Image 1: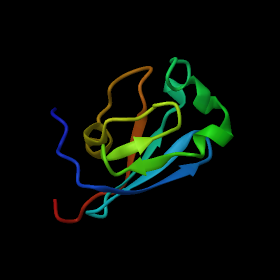
Image 2: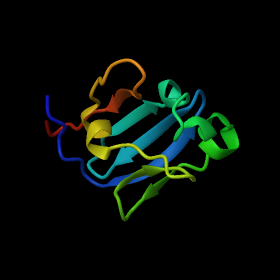
Image 3: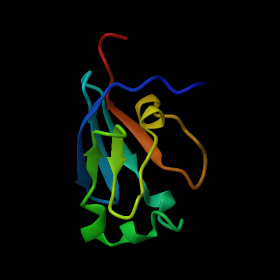
Length: 99
């Protein structure tokens, strides 16, 4: 399955358990659990909750980012693809009613 082209991300909110709630312009909402990524070099600094909680939406590249360069593919988040072990786990909370 190919990722869908994601609409604009409008907000990202840190949640307990290294989960980020991502809201898209079309009303879609995803919870992204990055726990499986925390052993990788880029995501390891996010084990510190103070760093993890600095997640923002970078309007220039159109996805969520953290200090130090960690980011995630917006199309994968939007499509809620299961990429297997050691990848972010994505859960659909509010699917678009226009589907």
